[in-house]
Image (cartoon, rainbow, N blue to C red; front, side):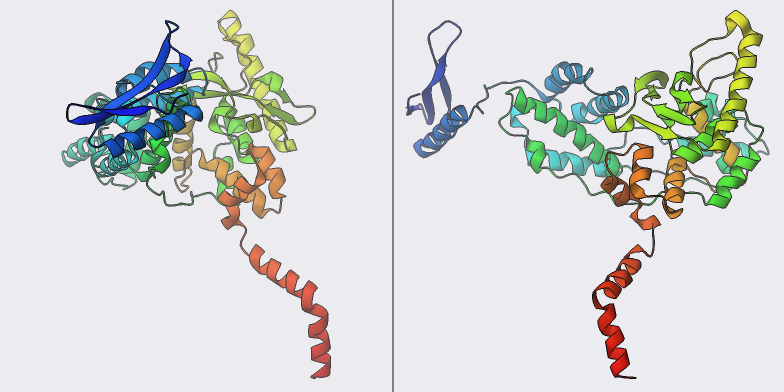
Length: 443
């Protein structure tokens, strides 16, 4: 490869050098770029371009826009590479936030400062989804002033929300929980998730030779304050289970509180994965929600695939549930939808994960318990297991975390006193004998 040369064309300078490979027609190929104000700038750019070729980091000049790359090339390419929920979230972020604000710009002109400015704008005025909670409350409050009690169905029709959302809203308003308007900007966590999608896309842009470097590497997303999700105490968990002893999905909630399964995992369990004689459950598939529809899917990661033991009472609850389902199968006959799923409705239809979430909210409210998410039952299990003295490594394996270090980084706060205990044990081991001698010599 030759060193290259620079020439003046009109009022600006350009560089040119021969590439090591030949062009499509078999003739020598050249890298040329112009528009430099001075000869010095052209030479500097030429040296950088030659170095990029030598390091196999050269990219061809392209006018492709951010919109075209993300929507027409990247999203179709990764659809089969990531799980359905991740893809659904990423494509929603791209269409809702990235394309409207950055889509018309050229991909190769995207810079870290531009991304930082974009994140700042999202934090300030990025919210595009309507504040349905406020809309529902205003409708409910107006009706209440007239002495009426609107039904969830009426709220659904008036506000364009799901029946699940309307039912949950009515429970909140009747309990005196009045919503406050959401800010115009997005939450830092949402902006951070958008950044993760952009970063992954630009990693591929570098790999596909659209970009030399990833501008998202130097565009730091907003910090997300760590928060501790509320969990139930053992007494509250027991109170909940006692209050739902006759609920159809008693066994599901008991299994959740004794294993900490993810919602997708517990809704996707099939009978062949359960060995009630051995008291074990094999976790390897789930049931996720994509664009509002439930569908079967593999578990999140390889670490999520695991075999876990079940306690005797949970096994007993599952045996009772199995007998109920067998009786329903016999009753419905050919109309029973036999899917092998453990948790179903009377006719064998699979449970929808969102329906289980809303059912939990309703049952917890009826029991007079503090409001937590269904996912917080997982946190409740982990918290209880660690406080019961179970080895953190065992807990980490049971809930499907990649390693115990991650588990402890999330749940270290639930083990108060460990640092004090470590200090006392270390001091006693290192200096205990000396302290005894000093005490004896100084009575």
